[in-house]
Image (tube, rainbow, N blue to C red; front, side):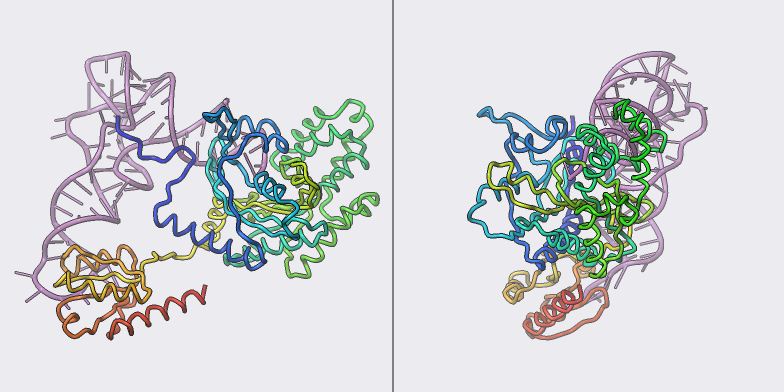
Amino acid sequence: MPLPLQPYKGARDFYPPDKRLQKYMFGKWREVAERYGYEEYDAPILESLEIYQAKTGDEIVNEQTYSFEDRGKRQVVIRPEMTPTVSRMVAARRQELSYPLRWYSIPNLWRYERPQRGRLREHWQLNVDIFGIADSGAEYEIIVMVDDIFKTFGADSKMYEIRLNSRQLIDQALINYIGFSSNESRALSHLIDRKAKMDKSKFISAIDDLVSPKARASGKVEKLLALLDIDNLDNLPAMLKLHDSALDLKKMLRQLNQAGIKNTLFDISLMRGFDYYTGIVFEVYDRHPENNRSMLGGGRYDGLVGAFGVTPLPTVGFGWGDVTLANFLELHHLLPQIKTETEIYAVLLDDLEKSQAPIAKLRQLGLDLAVDWSNRKLGDQIKTANKKSIPYLLVIGRNELKNNKFTLKHLESSQEITGSLSELANHVIEERNNLKNKQ
RNA sequence: GCGAGCGUAGCUCAGCAGGUUAGAGCGUCGGGUUGUGGACCCGAAGGCCGUGGGUUCAAGCCCCAUCGCUCGCCCCA
C-alpha cells in the first residue's frame, strides 16, 4: 500500500505560493486591525468541551466538532470557533483588564462536516472583538473597520454589500408585534434565516408546521409574511419603527452613510445562526453573481462573558474566514502577484570557496539571498532563478572576485547595475522600500 | 448525516461500441559546445486508468463496494 499523498480530508497543504497568499491576506488583516488599535492575542487550539455547551446548540458540539477524550478522561474539543475562547480569556481577567478592550486573532479552526465551496474542515479566521462598550459606537467602529479591510484589499463598494438587522428588533416583531410565543419565535428566526434559499410556498408551509393552529387561524402568519417583505426601516409598522432597536439601526445606517459607506442595507431576514447575539447583527455579502454568499458576519453578544460567572460585559465582534476571502479576491481579480521573499539569486561560476565572503557580506547588509551551489552552466542557473521568480541575479566569477565589483541583474527588465557590494545592497533595499510604500 | 456528479501522467484533459505494448498539450529534467534566462528545436523521465472485488475469452470503459474530489441539503463558527 503506497502512503497517501493527499492532505487529510477538508484540510489544506500550504505550498510556498499558497503560504505567500496567506501571508499577504493575514498581513492586511493585521495591518488594518492594528490601525484601529486592536491587539493580537492567541490561545490553545484545544478547549474543554464545557465552554461550548453553554452557548451553542447540541448539534454543533456533538456532530460538528472534532472532540475526543484525553488520557486523563477529560472531554476535549478542537476549537471550532474563537468566540467562546476569547470570552473565557476575558472573563478570567475580567477585573484587571481595562476597557474598552480591543483584541484580534487569526486562529486556525476545525469543524467536522462535509467540505464544500468556501467551507473546509480546516480554516483560519480573523476574529475581532471590542469589549466593554454598550453604545452603538462599537458596532459602528467594527463595521467601518470591515469596510476598511475590503478597501485595503483593493475592493470597491460595488463588489460587496453590508446587510444589517437587529436581534432585538426581531424579538420585538415576532413576540410583541405579532404575538408568537418565545419558543415559536426562536424556531421561526432559524427558519427566516433560510428564507432566501427556499421558494415561497415551501417557506410558507414550513412556517405553518412551526406555529400553533391557533396562531395560524388568527392571521399571524400573514402578518409575518407582510413584515418580511419590508426592506426599509421607514416602512415598518409604527410600533416597531419607534422601538429603540429600530432607531439604533437607523442611526447606524445614517452614520455609516456619513462615513461614506453606502453599500448597506436593512435585511429583516438576517439572523445569524447563533442564539447568543443580543443586538445589531451584520453580514457582508459578495455581489458577484457566482459567489452570492455571505462572506463574514458578526454582531453584538452582550451575554457571553457573563456566562463564565463574572459581571457581564457588552461585546461586539465578527469573524472572517480565509477561504471566503480568498474566493472573493480571486473572483474579483484582486489577487496581486506575490513574489518570493528571496531577493537575490547568487550564481557562482568559478571559485565556490572564495565566493562565500561576498555572499556573507550581502546577507549582513540585510538582503535575502539564495545561492546556487550546483556549479552548472550560467544559463542553467539563470533558468532556475527565473523559475523561482527571484527578482535579482548576482553573478560571482573570477572577474568579479578579482575587481571586487559585481553586477546585479534585474531579471524581469534585464537591467544591470555594477558596483561595490554595499552599493548594490543599497539599490535593492531602496527598491524594496519603494515597493512597500506602493502597496 | 442525506442526495447528485466525477476519479486516466505533477496539471488540464483525450481515449472508440468492452479488443493487442494507454495518448496530447502544459509543466519537470537533459541536450542545442566557451560567462547571461524567458522564444524556438530535439530528447527523456513520469500512469498497476483512485482502491478492492465481480461479470467476460478480453475491462480505463460494464456491475458492486470503498476511499477521495465537486456541487447541493442539514448546519453555519
